[in-house]
Image (tube, rainbow, N blue to C red; front, side, top):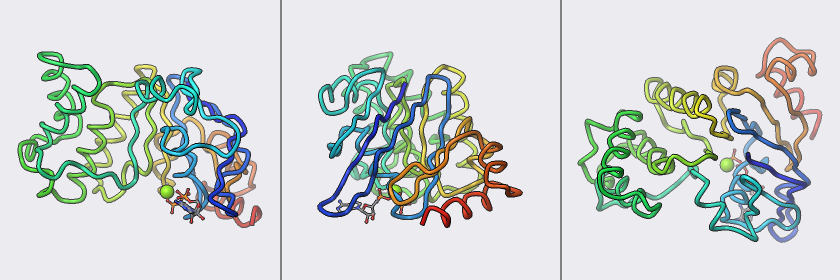
Length: 240
Ligand SMILES: Nc1ncnc2c1ncn2[C@@H]1O[C@H](COP(=O)(O)OP(=O)(O)OP(=O)(O)O)[C@@H](O)[C@H]1O
Ligand SMILES: [Mg+2]
């Protein structure tokens, strides 16, 4: 279970996230939509223990990101929108390394690494140095690395950024599968089609506030529009 409770985060005078409360239960996929600068990454980074909230809390399975960061990190797979990989390690080496950091060793580690290579279709380049991979290949390794320990909560900031249709499809399949295994998933995106395909619920953030929440159908109906893209535009304009 992922929970934000009245989460606020300011950078100096700038209130990037304001009083956001939401919850994502195990077996649920939640999409966070919002214009550039709306506050999505800031909120997700608070959950990932990388930023301290100005007020309010972010929790995973009841553990507070500020008070119990180690418990939170252990339960979390976090994909940052721009995450460095180890340039001088191959994809398999990166995956083994992150498995080990999470206490997965030996045969268990090898099994899990090969599962990730399969799930994200890394086979063709898994032994090449990460520094020599294309943007999309690197993104797939980054996601695999974030989830190699099979955490109960997946927090994915723009997981399909820079991916082609086939690679995006592999990510969708992975997320669906995670849902069916009871994982709680929250992801941010600018692609309405992904939301319609994948998300059980949607939250729209504008100016740091959660201004709409529901199933995609509920949001479309609530805005009196024909589709999610139009509903999103209307909701964001009205919030401004
Ligand atoms: N480290 C920082 N210092 C100061 N201001 C920041 C910092 N990081 C983000 N901001 C500001 O906080 C606001 C929210 O940014 P955030 O990155 O959370 O938006 P976002 O919804 O993820 O946008 P995008 O869709 O472009 O990724 C923006 O106005 C941004 O300029
Ligand atoms: Mg962002």
